Image (cartoon, rainbow over the protein chains, first blue to last red):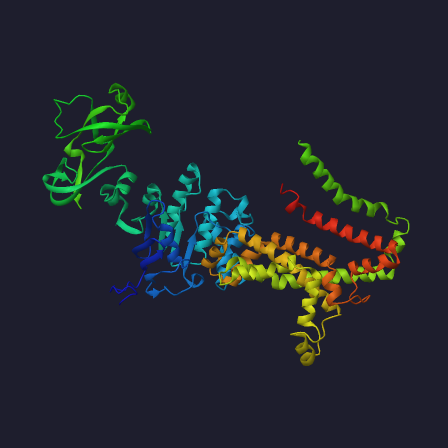
Length: 358
Length: 256
């Protein structure tokens, strides 16, 4: 099978098989996405990475420049959005303000040919399943953020889509509601039998809701895998920062990874060739004087660039031989008399580092 | 408050209010009930209301889709089309009447065919009044609805599309209810403009009592033979204008 851009691909007869290419002026989105029925895939990336463009292309709201899109083996490239078996939960839900929750949910079944009574019966069932039976008659402005989110999910599911798209499904909620709605959404996504793709810039949402993460930066996929794999093996600074790790790239030789910028890091893993090394900020120990008794092999001279509170700890941004972030207790920070510009020695035990092939 | 601003401001206000006060002062209050119940007045009032309402209906049927076209689609020359649509707003109504005659008159560009093929004559008929009023009033509706459409979030239409609605269904079931207040305001505005229409009507439809003589035409005619009747008719139109203003108050008077 040959697609528009000339590459040959195997046909996936079930689930999603997409190569999305969208040109928008100087920005080019070029991502490949595949998923089996039952999969929940999260597109994770910074703002402006092209996640929402990818979602719009899947829904048919933005045309593909090239590439292909197949769902359960059926090509959808040329199918208008109203004929695609795709449901969308928009970031701010876009519930129709003039319709009740029930009629919002019944809208899809109505458009897809159900009679008025039939559509309403289906809608009532969906609202009941979402625990919203009591709010069927309410207009969207009378619903709380969490309730509106569930109506939006019910509305998208009521058309029985083969692909469910969710754009930042929790972004519009306050912190407390978010916790509760995230748990409910996770349950509903787990029950959903077709493919679900969600877009988020929040790593926690992505890791809780999705089985697989696809990290997008500058319109391209930079890494994909299970949440736990990506958390332990980040491949870009963006992901490393998201999961709170120091990340370096270099060449491994035995237990040493020599970084492109000069310094070397000793690790427990034995590797050769291009490699990443990662370690958490909590693994770093700081000293004002060069430590003499320390057994740490990884010792670098640094300077404090900035300090900020991070939970009940102090996070120090260090520059110097090896730029890194270190977490320490408030007491330790006070004892060390840390302040921006202070010279420090940073050590990391080899057992606290994690090296993997690049 | 600076005097150089305050004095002209009060002068301007007085200039706008004085004629209206004069109308109320000189109104033949005692003979008013009699004046207003005469057959001619009722005839003119009924004709005015029927024609203005028909013109508003016609404007809605073609004006709302036109506003949608201008607000939601892109085509070459769209700016030019919008300029054309708004032209009747600034065109002297008499010129509009002349232009209508040249288009739909018995020997007009289209009128001659209407006459010879279908036997339809438009000028100097009640239908002609409706056409003249529509020509002048529709731009008000189109501009009002287009503005509301531009302010409305087009993503609601996208949401409807992802639920399986065709573009027309999305317009009918989602956009139309959302912009209903704008359509209502535009319709009231167009209706008021149609009700007061004089120049295009008298040029294109003439001044035949019971057939094409609307209120403004009756006022003008009465002023020459029966000033008291003209004042009474003017009071009726003033009352209607105030009612329109009241109907639109939420939209304009609270905008400050």
